[in-house]
Length: 334
Image 1 (cartoon, rainbow, N blue to C red):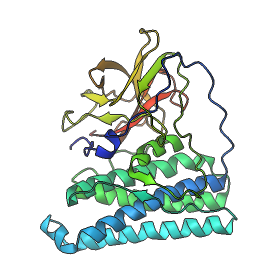
Image 2 (image 1 turned 135 degrees about the vertical axis):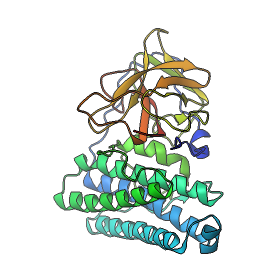
Image 3 (image 1 turned 90 degrees about the horizontal axis):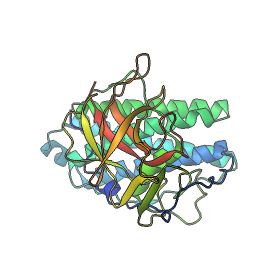
Image 4 (image 1 turned 180 degrees about the horizontal axis):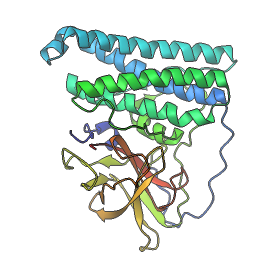
């Protein structure tokens, strides 16, 4: 299997918000309480993105284009069904929010930089996988049992979409016994580079735009960015085609630097799993960090399939407050 960097041109081109060179010691302002309406609007934002993604691609590439790329009519029709599912999810969440008296977010303007069928399929697989992790991560914060059940019913459909696309790409359709939950800010970091602009009257999302993680041991320097939760971290295109535990890879921090403020403390790559992050020491190299993919401890979820990695100065937990950059995406074979 090939590592999933899919050139991630949109992600790689995004710069990072950077505070002045100082030791980031102040506490981040407490986030306001997140309501079920906030979470549903967050989910609707992602569904708008996926819905627009499939409509754009199916509007730009015909059934004959897919046939020329080696995909039959059955596959093309199934893509139309996936597109229809995403449109239905948008309609459902919009209606649920309206019925609850919450203003639903409207569709944004997007740029997916899709140039051919293959780039579409690779990005489709990534977006579906991120969608699964988004719903899974948000589930614990949903208070209403009815909303939780509805979100769960969407999550299972997104998982089937993901498995179908992965299988088409000759990747394992179910690479791990467990899916990976992501926080709101982690998901927003992955989605934001595809969002060009949004209606000014859209309700605010429950994400920390351009946060400054309070990491006493780290400094980040770079250029300004206003629409990303965390600085971009990407898997190097020079990484091995097949990545497994024990493979040494590079994670790129383009246009910014992450380094210990005292020049001594260790920076870690945290591989996120449902049973907790698995840490590996990160070594600074030109343009980023080198890290060896760790083996998950016995009894915990393995690192496999679509995998998310963040940089941190802490090796005990991963939170929004301890994240310096990422997540980066890569495909890990078991």
